[in-house]
Length: 314
Length: 192
Image (cartoon, rainbow over all chains, first blue to last red; front, top):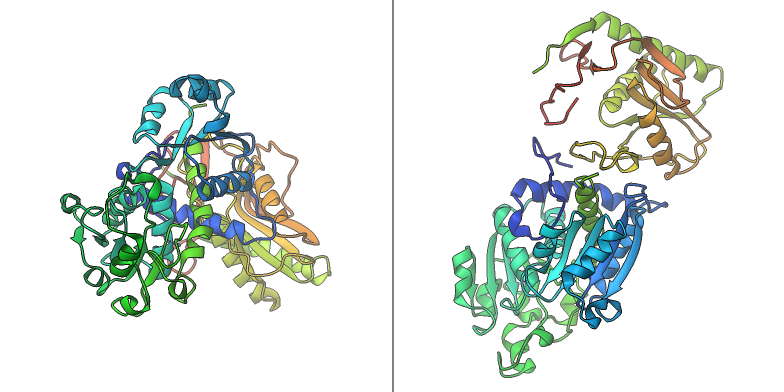
């Protein structure tokens, strides 16, 4: 394990990868390495957050992220409350800030929050003393997903520096893509984004990634390919003619995978639409690290919760 | 950078390590701790444990396995201490069930680190016995914990810190004291 030198973690919130330095990302990844071992033990629990209260406040539906956060909190011995949109007083007309202030009045130490509005967590973090962890804000940011993707790549490849990482799919609507791009660039990877031009605008070149509208060009020489799901729920329609056509031109199948480097990793943040963006033979094949991403997500979330909890006001 | 004041020189430290090893070997020979392993508490307990293993082998030929334990996840002061919680490697490459574990740390003071280490070990299994070895006992105990194998007792002021530097063959070993208020920063950025 590489101990990060001379760097101090001092953030009470995790809002976006964009706000983190490369050193801070490495602190999280190093810390996560040790937390991963906790989950491999017989006793999968440590008392690091004993006596702390964590509220999982998910205004937008989530299964895997919420489950992962919840388990991470339990493995750190925190007390947990779950609030979802349907059970919150937002339905009764309460403002978001009032809801969060009520949560805080119950002495919640950390709030894990998902919201459909970009920047919702940053706004809340300015107004409350509880630590805020962004579990996804609209199409903007999903820092823990990017961190677990990067952790998985680092674990397999040793370092991110100089790796060719291609992200294929609905880039414009994807908070996973944005977060990955920021994190990967900070750690020195070469990033390519690819998909139909309606979903992958040229504007992305401005943040330092290669934009590609051709699957084979995106796959050629890639060390990692991260496939994103076509997000029906974020599309108001008309971005491409049909799912079948998308799959034919941008889905990853055995023929297209020949363009990848031989030891390339195949990643997917889930849930997979099998046969659309990724063929089953590859999703379940030897290059796939999709389920390891899920395992690593737990370790990364434990690390992030642990680090921000150490920076709360008394 | 605070002034360091030398308390014990190279030969004193080497004698103390040999003494700790000798008391362990004595218990081993009497059958009190047959089949024992050393678990060093990160970070300075690990270097002491490595030295003890060499010394014990020289004294009685027994090769004790080494484990390392990081107790950061078991501390009871999260949010109280303003310090970067660097988590170091916990690597226990053996089954601690039914064996005798000697916990190793450089300086024993409040006993809180050892309390956390006992909790941590507990999550790895159920050792037959747990013993504690420390190079320096500086008093100021806050928990009912004592060392089974101890190199020396040193008394310093409450606002002072004892710094054990074990360098083995590469450089001289030493024990120094320095003021807590201006804590020293090690080469790897950690406070010592």
